[in-house]
Amino acid sequence: MGVKIKILQVCNSYLPYRGGIETHVASISERLAREHDVTVFTTDPSGDLPEEEEVNGVLVRRFGAFSPGNAYYLSLDMWAELRNSRFDIVHGHNYHAFPLFFSRYADKTRFVVTPHYHRHGTTGFRDLLVKLYKPFGKKIFQEADRVIALCRYEKELLTEDFSIENGKIAVIPDGINRADFRGLEKGRGKRNTILCVSRLEEDKGVQYAVRALPLLNDNIRLEIVGSGTYKERLVELVVGLGVSSRVDFYQDLSLMLLSTTKISTW
Image (cartoon, rainbow, N blue to C red):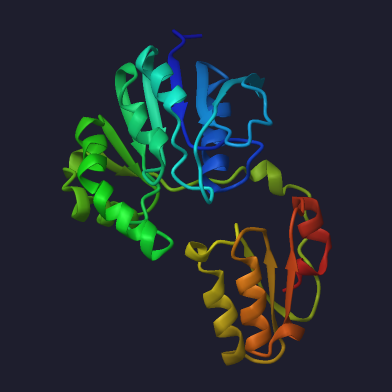
């Protein structure tokens, strides 16, 4: 085995919180932990989770944070700890929360950034804050050794908004763990079903699938799996469009349940 590298992942939230960034960071952290020393600095606004624990080979350290409406995740305790930390590689995540900005302050050899960049906020007020934050956020990309975009579209946004030179930014899409899907059987139903699995927030765009449903044949159903603050608005939209009989909501389903319930019909 080669020399172990000390790697720090910095993100606003981590398992057991669920979401795209949480899953992304956990997946790469656990794989890296097979050969290297991996630590995650994250926040826990609730204060209910252990301040420090090992999860699947990864040392997870949680800090209290100010997070109104599950946003911003301002943690001065994390910032102070980062200023006194030393790692070979620091990998910061999520431009739209403060932990990535604070990750700049850690003593490190290499600084990698995966911004999950949207360009806009989810509300008018948050969108204004994103614009005001831009001169400060730009420092992140100026100091980064490498920037990882999850798709070409995100790369284009980052290049346009922050003038990141092409040689610094790479596109590495999210992957899947094929082992999670072994043994799952494809449904044999006769209906045509659109399946949306997502955190139910406005920026995820599930509402566009709902609005498209009246334009499609009556035998096409929409199955929505997830939870979030936007669910009530989605239910209101479904009722308002008169498609309640063609839409079902689910949450907290395992992969096995997804394979055996009517959600898997094709």
